[in-house]
Every structure is written in C-alpha cells, then in structure tokens.
Image (cartoon, rainbow, N blue to C red; front, side, top):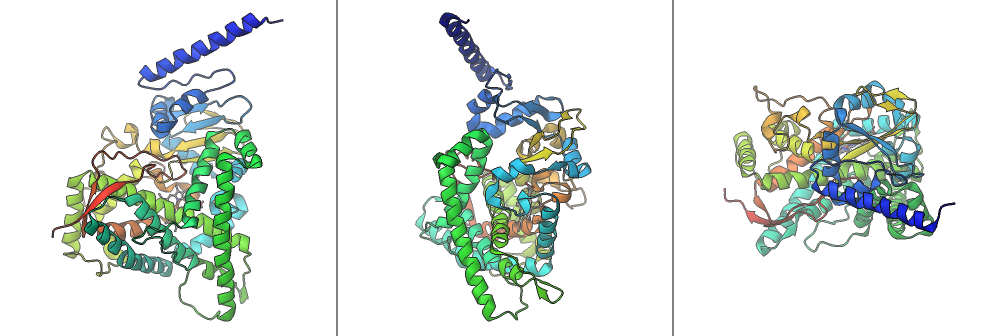
Length: 505
Ligand code: HEM
C-alpha cells in the first residue's frame, strides 16, 4: 500500500517537472511538446493559447515534413495527427479524397451547420454540392450579387465612411465590414436587408448570434468533448450562449422562410434572378416543383452565411490592415486603378471583365489570404488506415487537423521572404497571375471540396477595395496591434481601429 508521504512526494515531483518544463517553454525559441501522463500534451498548448496559431506554426516548422502527433489528456479523445505538409494535403484532399471525410465528430461539433454542405459527406454532400454549383456558378447569380454589393457600397458604406471622416472619429473597420457583409448575405440568401450598416451602428441580434455560434464552435475544439457536452447538458458557460445564439438565428431565418412561402404562394411566375431561398423554393424537376422543407432551407442559409459572409469580412479586414501598413503597395494599387480606368468614382460601375484587369490588386488579395486565411484550420477523419506521403501512419478514425495559417508561413513553400506582404510574388514576368497549386495556396481548400465561391469573393473584395481606396486614406490608429481571434474564422479579436481621411486626387 502506498503511504500518504509517498503520494505527496510523487505529486511534489510531478509538479516540479511541470514547473521546470514551463520554464523551458518560456526560454526555448521552438516549443517542445512533452507527452505527460494524464495530461498528454495539453499543458503547453493551454499555456500558449493566446497565440495559438503562431505557436502551432513554430511547432510544425520543427517537425519532420511539418507533421506531428498531438496527444490530448487521457480519456478525452483529443488525439490528433497535425499536418501542414502540402503533399500530405494533396493526398488527403484529392488523391485519397474518399478516405478522408468530415466524419461523425465534426458533425457533432459543427451541429449548428445542420445537414448543410460544410457538415456532410458522401451522398448528402454530393447533393448539396451539385445544388450549390448550379446556383453559384451561373453568370446571372454573379450579376445579381454584384448589383446588391454595388447598391450597398453606394447607399450605405460610402455614406457611413463619409460621416466617420467628417466626425474625425476612430472607427472599427472590422465591425463596418461585418455589418456590410451581413446585409449583403441577407439580401443574397434571404432577399431582405436588415440594415446593420448605418451610422448609428444598431445592435442586430441575429448578427451577434452568428458571431457567438462561431466562437462556440472554436471552444468545442479547445476542451474535451465530455466537458462541452456536460456544459451543454447543464446549460452553462459557452454552451449556454451557443444554445441561445442558435435559437436567435433560427427564429430569424424561419420567420424569413415563412414570409417567403406566403409571398410565393401569391405569385410564382417570375423568372428574374432573385434571392437564394426563393430560387430554391421555385426549383423544378421536370414540371414538378421540388419541395424543400424548412429545415433544409435553414441549413442552406446557415452554411451560406458562414461561407459567404465571415470569410469576406476576414479577407477585407486583413487586406485593409496590410494595405494601410504598406504605403508602397497602396500607391501601386491606386496607380493600377488609375491606369486602367482613369479617376474612379463610385457611380462608375465596373464590369466583371474590367475587374479582372486589376492584376496587382489580385496579387495583394492573394497575399492577404495567404498570410491570414479566413478559415485558419480544418479537420478530417480517416475512414480506413493509411500511410501519408510523409510516412506518418494513419489509423482508422484518426482525426487530422491541418493549419492553413501555418502553410502561408513556410519558407519551403514561399521562400525566405514568406512573412512579407509582397503582391509581386503573384505576378508573372508577362504580367499575368502566377498559378500556384491549390494544395500549396490552400486558402480556398483543394480537391473536390474546393470553395465554390472563389470567383465571387474576388469580385466582392475588388469592388469594395476600389470603392474605399479611391475615395479615402485608411490609417491604423497608432499603437493598435491586431490580435488573432479564437474562432473558426480568422478575425481580429480587438477589431481594426482606424481613422478615415479624404484622399486628395
Ligand atoms: C475570401 C473568401 C473565401 C474563402 C477564403 C473561402 C474558403 C473556403 C474554404 C477553406 C472552404 C473549405 C471548408 C471546409 O471544407 O471545411 C470553402 C468551402 C466552401 N465555400 Fe468558400 N471561401 C470564401 C468565400 C466564399 C463565398 C463568397 C462563397 C459563396 C457565396 C463560398 C462558398 C463555399 C461553399 C459552398 C463551400 C463548401 C464546398 C464543399 O464542401 O463542397 N465561399 N471555402
């Protein structure tokens, strides 16, 4: 039998080891993950939680082929294979696509996504993918979306920035973009504009609920499943907020679905391109209308909100931060706009083909997406055992995390200047865009699940950037250092505080 004294000695020794290890992490340039009894490798991760993305990047840089195992605390099912090796990703996302799925656990963690495209595999995913493809990839939809954005830029964003500039006040540009993209996505998906973007910065419950859900999903990655499940059951902490936020979102969307159904029952004959919900409600197979139930429409809406809204907010926020802190890049973007279109004013509507001429701006957007990918990490689950090209063994059901954020910061992929914001790296000698394989420039994913909104996103980002930059100078407030958020979308935790001044032409 163990005596109390020996137990106390054992505990004392154990904690001494931890203190010693913490001391080493602090002094060591590269983090070392020790696999402790009971705790696994969670302690250094928790210790570095405030800078988790950079911590993981440094860790992966030191591993063979940027790949390692992460062992969570005992009995928590938090063991992962972590990789950011492009060849491994090519293998998982393309070559052995069928073996690497989102899986059951993903479905649980991302339950707010319902049975939408992001959250499903096999036949349900295929159905969703072809449905989204048939809508998002048609020219009419591109034009419809462009019209909504143009309208929002003219009627809301520019007047708001004008007001901020006249007041001389500091504004959180990320909040502005959040409101801008929320109004846009509501118009595109639901056909209604909640007018979040206005000079009195109204509190819109659904918009807040949405952000809350995304933070809640990130939280479910940080703690063992048993912990968040218990919190959910007891309705406490982050899980309580999540339930409340989901309820708010559902109320908002179901109310929209109801009124759309009523509207449609009164008048069905209209072939104009309209919002997505109406398009789906009017969908026909042969001469029969396809009946999608309310839950299906709710899930479609939720998935598109995440796909087409937060990603754009994130991309715009980081792009403006990088432009504002790189005056030479800003000057070159403005020069390119002038060279192609003369002096720009917001009323001058640029066509999609005209936007494609802006190669330097395209390069700047790619750079922002490389350094700050809106979706900073993804997860997959293996169905069968496998060996990755890096030689790492994958057992059946292994969960694999891959970090898009880290991949933008590897010298092996981008060269010694990988941490610099250099739009030039995207421009070929002949003045076109350099093609980089999607498993290296991974921000839009790769393989059969590649993002369906890539072209749409470039249109939106270019239109918004031209509208703002040609009228205003954006200056980051002195001393404001952006902090990466803990969410499934890479935002700034402390927003982007800027001053706006009129650009002298
Ligand atoms: C800068 C903007 C964007 C970025 C960086 C981006 C990135 C991504 C990424 C990384 C994925 C894979 C996610 C996963 O499988 O977990 C994805 C999927 C997807 N994206 Fe985007 N996205 C952007 C904008 C958009 C827009 C504007 C739309 C549509 C309006 C869109 C529609 C989709 C859809 C439908 C999928 C699901 C594809 C599938 O699973 O088959 N995205 N996107």
